[in-house]
Image (tube, rainbow, N blue to C red; front, top):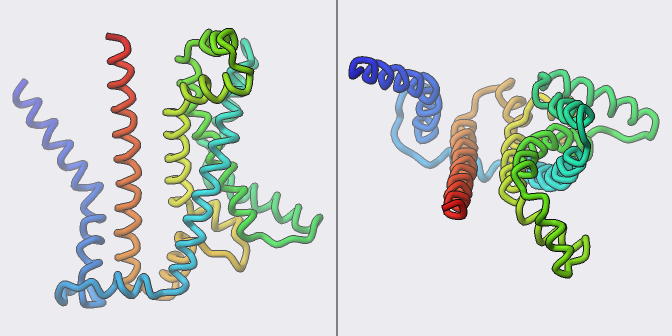
Length: 268
């Protein structure tokens, strides 16, 4: 048993090293004064140059704006969709829920190409170009299923009689919905919103196909920069992005653990 435990720990450690060693190297070289692979001394120069780059700052603003708006609208639509799906009965509910999961399991390139063709067709019909609006709609499209996936378990665990009890105690349907239903679903709603925000920041393929010629976010701007040369500011930018994603994921895990403790305290 002890040998098995040691082998398991070694295996997990090797997997972690394999996964995170490249990121550790990237973070290390973000503080390298030299532009080459040789170590030239410690510096914050590339971080300062990163914030002085107008193209990267514009791309960062576009990325954050798209992520915030997409996660907000996707949360509203996904929550409403989850409540609507739950109101179906029998095979219809299972069918609709499976259909809503298709964007999650389908390859990004399939969604990117299909959305590009759709926006191209609509652009010809209504005379508009792809840009901020098309990227925002695309991100909302692939973020909504993640919200549904997070909210549905909360709906199933919720006591359906709470809504009726709120009505009996004097709430109108509007008050009962927001004070009882939304309150009970809030952990799933927050998780879905944070995951949508993370996926929106991280997306490249769908954005690449739907951005048009004049719009750039961080992922596409980095891609265009790497095609020309490899500026060390990319290391600094990638380090900051990695830290942001880690912070978001830690917040999600902390929130979920607190919610589990709160439910456990209610039971006992």
